[in-house]
Image 1 (cartoon, one colour):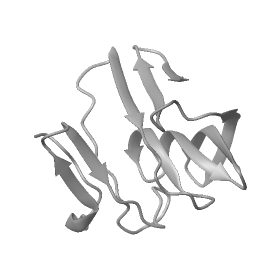
Image 2: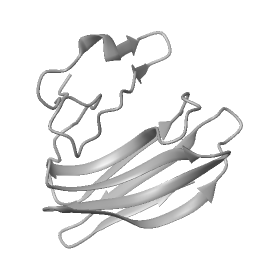
Image 3: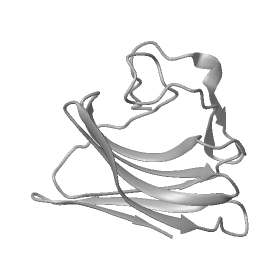
Length: 134
């Protein structure tokens, strides 16, 4: 296991389900933009050309909760691809944090798949990061 955490993880927020081969993360109100400990797990990017995928299952029905993937350098520099709920609709958002600016740069309404999930993917090469969902 080569997981990384931000600061000191709240261990109760990370549950390994070995029978179903999945990791369950219990979210909190802390985001990657806060100087606190978000529920977050990372794997170091080991080269320029990578493909990272995850199917996320947002179980929280409250507005504003985020679940997704991030290309994280540090607290001031990262891209976030996440699913969130606003009122009665689910959206996929791409946001970037550059120094003291944080902005959602793309957003689309999305439906969860039959089992309640959304597939996310980040592809990288020597020049670009590309973000996908389905």
